[in-house]
Image 1 (spheres, one colour):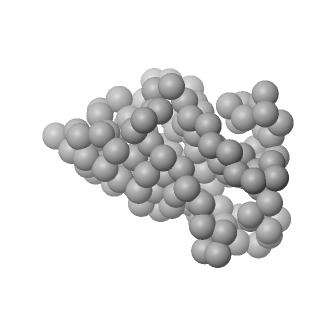
Image 2 (image 1 turned 30 degrees about the vertical axis):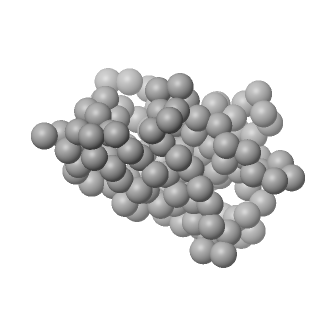
Amino acid sequence: QVRLVESGGGLVQPGGSLRLSCTASGDTFSQYSVGWFRHRPGREREFVGVVRKSGGNTYYYADSVKGRFTISRDNAQNTVYLQMNRLNPEDTGLYYCAAGRPILSAIRDENGYRVWGQGTQVTVSS
């Protein structure tokens, strides 16, 4: 059973950057796809991006973060990162990582992921 812990959230000014980490323990993490989701105030939880494990690793992003956010994974450290650049107040929210084996058509659906971390808060404000 994989267990996930997010870290790296905090308060940042608009235009700034943060790097979130999702560290796993307990199972063969490298064999899972790992998605990032966020829960912004007043909205439902939404897909941010995913590194999908299918043979190699393929990366997909929500349109709202494409070009600003980058996912990477370090299997030796059992960690997946979410590098967030050019942050704006609309990016404020609770960020979660999740592991699973979603099929390609379901990578944006949280039901495709079976293990979730506890979330880390990101606040973008001046």
